Length: 248
Image (tube, rainbow, N blue to C red; front, side):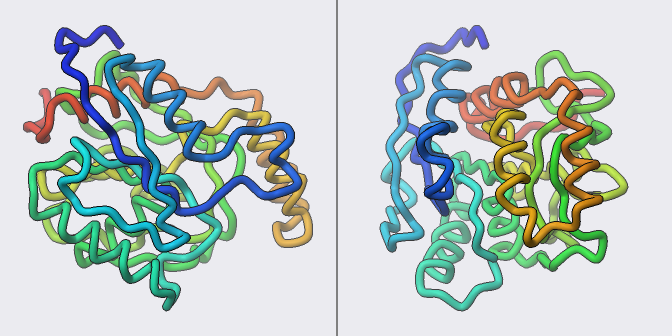
């Protein structure tokens, strides 16, 4: 992204999980995946991580913007850090500080603001998923009719919070990209994941994901992903500070 505004901003990465131990020799951790993609899009964005799954919960104004990693945990868990993160997200929603929820983070955003997240009756979403783009927002440059992202989730947002806008979706996951409250962006897919990491994760989870679904997921990895383009959107969204109306 070529931003006309080179102001230094600090983006807080809310780390909600970590790369499984047996994959750490081959892949960097989730917060580092996000930091690399984000700074590739906008070199003037600096990143700082809070391991929220270890109980490190910041204050909303500790950073200029926030972004989450994914997680193997559920937003419906009754753990202390889950409740603390939910409260944090609800507090950010009352400010004009940009918040980007990726996968688990989008689900947490929905829950914190009155939506609903459930285990999907359609099973696991794995591999590369293509979503139709329903509307173009000002922070979305180079928008095509569809966007392709690596996905890895069993739960999804089944009821949107009041005031949410649907940006993209598909038959398997109707609510794939959403915005809420003017400063909140949710993305169910993983723009930070490579297809190599997606393959490794599926292979590791053969004991819990049906073989047919994994085969479909591996076949889908030949589809070109739009992770870099979506991180350009994220960087632009952070720069914009607030969400404007869709571009007709």
